[in-house]
Amino acid sequence: METFQGYRRPQGLPGTRNLVAVIPSVFCANTVARRIAEHVAGAVAFCHPVGCSQVGLDLELTARGLKGLGQHPNFYGVVVVGLGCERFRPRELADSIAAAGKPVEMLVIQEEGDTLRAIEKGITFASRLVEEASRQKREAFPLSELSLGLKCGGTDATSGLAANPALGWVTDQIVAAGGRAIFTEVTELIGAESILAGRGKTPQVAGQILTTIGSMEKRLSAATASREVRHRSALISPGNEEGGVTTVAEKALGGIYKAGTGPISGVVAYGQYPEAPGLYLLDCVGHDGEAVTGLVASGCQEVVFTTGRGTPTGFPGVPIVKITGNNATYARMKFNLDFNAGPIMEGATIAEVGMGLLAKVLDIASGEPARAELLGHDELFCITRI
Amino acid sequence: MAKALKINTRDNCAVLLADSKAGDPVEVRTDAGTIRLVARQDIALGHKISLARLEADQPIIKYGEEIGQALEVIEAGDWIHLHNVTCRRGHENQEA
Image (cartoon, rainbow over all chains, first blue to last red):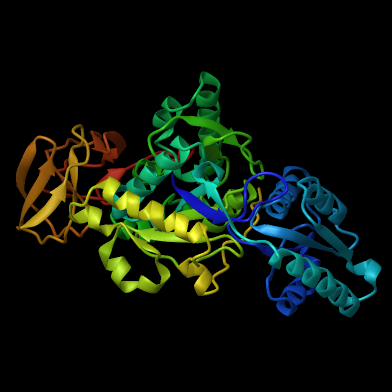
């Protein structure tokens, strides 16, 4: 039976990494959070531009995103850094992380006195958590303990022919073994909704899939309606177009291969972890950072990211496995890419290449650094907004 | 000879597996065997070649599904891309 080596957590799935997260509840605490993490090897800061002066669903999405991040299994524990007057209360964040059974410490700059005192206290907290984390050893876990995020970016026509089908094969194996897989990028599912709804496990799920994609299409239609922005109304990127992708529907049909062939168990909201095994659709946009942050905030311990054009990006503390189906891209951007699905373009079978990809996914889950980790790429942390 | 792949039996286009030049013969792999065409323009790896004459407004089928409609008559062997395809999805409110 296939296994990976992970870190056991008090609740939920195991971690594939064992770091300490330093999370500001508001952007005003970013510098303090960053300086704390800079002083403590094994701590990572999650600076962001939100938490202040937001209302309603926008504020709620920030809250859900930061809570989902704080509860994430790849972090042994968390230091929450607040300013003191922000709308998203640091206490709410810290309490949600404690409820997930994890060690959490909180400091509030206005209560500590000043930047220096806040940093000093944060360093003390973070180093103690790192020390505790370091005593933990990896253990073997079955595939059923893995929640894999599925993403594509820098799509070209090889994505739909090679990289996404190979990833779809891996998705099917993980879901069949009782694991979880989550796909998203709802802005790029337009044109594939009837196929996806047909894969809904129940009529309710089929309805949720249609509503989720339908609402996103309405949002896009409204955003592109004005004459003034006609020149900015393309739903796919210039890179997609140069790579041979002509329409958003074509991109969608190639993109859904990464979700394999099995039934879809449900739609999860931003910041929500699936409660049971299966394949899920996460309601989030296609922006690479927002989508990957959404996958992480829904508990994915690892993300496989297919790319035809090639992209170097990474996420702090969560391995992002880059694969391409484009042999020329693999040759050109080799050090940014973990796996080449290009042999499919030359006649290799999807299962052959898929088996190699699954082995790579499990090696990286077990501690082998993904290329984005080796190179220190951390661009993908990006809280979604409306 | 450039090679291309017809992904689904319903498709009316194929994907080039290597760059081809205008006038090049193209060998298309399909479920039902090999079709031979001549590329009417330069078509790059990953881009689409039409397998049949398509009238304006006729759907372009790839992966067995509609990805857009022809803006004009497209001949067999033509490059299919932004210049001769439209897709209204996500743009319903926009004037034509």
